Length: 303
Ligand code: HEC
Image (cartoon, rainbow, N blue to C red; front, side, top):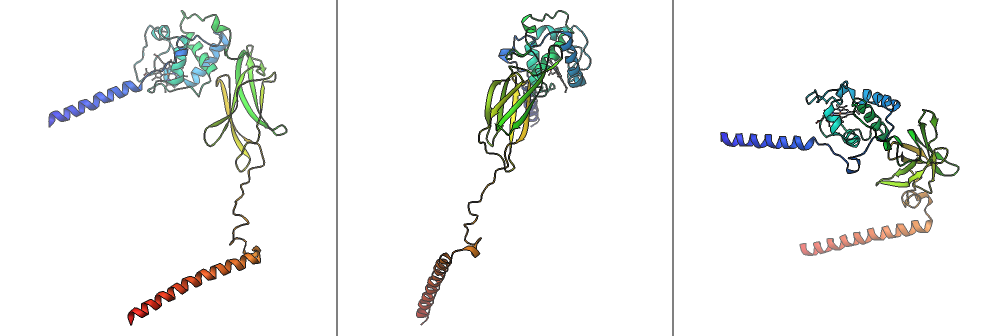
């Protein structure tokens, strides 16, 4: 008896250990394994990365200090300035760790922090690693898919009622921090439907005004005339979701309205009323007649 209890406890603790180790795992995308920093490795980006680190990471990871090995034990978050971590992780691996977390102590930031900002945080982390060499390629483009070189700030959606178009307006900053209208950035726009999302455009490039406008066609709306539109640009560097009013509303007509016999008795044509009454009275009469016959059969049996 005692042995079996011990066995059970052993089994439970082993499965707990397996569960714990299976839970805390880093997921690294194949395509990003060897990726280099995708923003310039310069003062501006390092400063911007520090601001993000201070607001999103510092609560757990605390101050970064340069050490040989991580000087903090779990559950404390590691000191990201340690040489072991810096020398064994590529920029792309850091990017994946920040994006997906590890299902344990490290939370995922895939959605909360834009891709560009994640690279900036990495630029900041790298500033604690003197041996770090930014590749020349990585200093060329902020976001390789786009011809726009700079930082995207936001994407705004609106409805152009004159042309029945959904308009996405991007805003951003060029390398010198000037506010500009990003040109040539790929934008995707979707309309939320009951089941899934209806793409309006996928990878349409912004014009010189930083805009993409897409004809809406004759899309059903909710009863008040709203649709929910989602847009993202440059592989989700910025994204948004808006409720747009695109029509006066969709009026659902009850097919029974005006036709239902009981609802419009006062308006019923006379012939219909007479037919209806005749049919009803005859049915009732037939039922009464049937009962009467039954009653007669019953009486016959009594005698
Ligand atoms: C809620 C606390 C918490 C926050 C917030 C947090 N982290 Fe972590 N992070 C951890 C913990 C705990 C670990 C260690 C996980 C493990 O090893 O199981 C970790 C691990 C990491 C690692 C992997 C280290 C290694 O040795 O491979 C990186 C990189 C990292 N964090 C970066 C960040 C960045 C960048 C931010 C901010 C955007 C951040 N973390 C925010 C708790 C946090």
